[in-house]
Amino acid sequence: QVQLVESGGGLVQAGGSLRLSCAASRSIFSFNAMAWYRQAPGKQRELVARISTHGSTDYSDSAKGRFTISRDSAKNTVYLQMNSLKPEDTAVYYCNGYAEMAYWGQGTQVTVSS
Image (tube, rainbow, N blue to C red; front, side, top):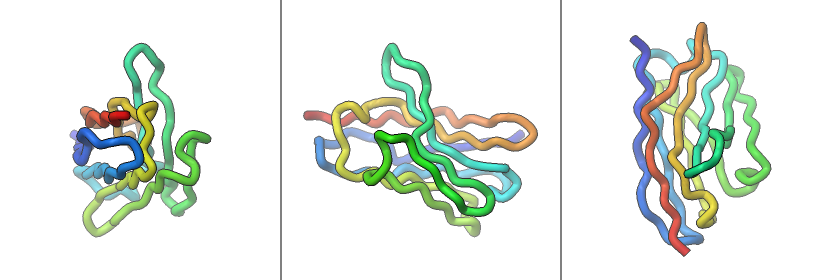
């Protein structure tokens, strides 16, 4: 059973920073890609950032320049560093790993106050 466990969410003021972590129960290189998604109330889940096995990254337009996805293979962990947070970044953030199927974490709440 593959598990992805997120941590690091919380309440922060606008302009602040948070770092989310996603710990995988198996090697992150066993996934074709790992990603962070988010879902705000009443909205669809959307891709925030993705990192491939080869290390290439891509970001949503809203995340570019403010968020950075990275990984630590020794810890089987993927991170999302979020800077210059805005109230519209408020959402539940989910870790995703795609291999033979898509795996999801339970989500971590990020709330940005104005």
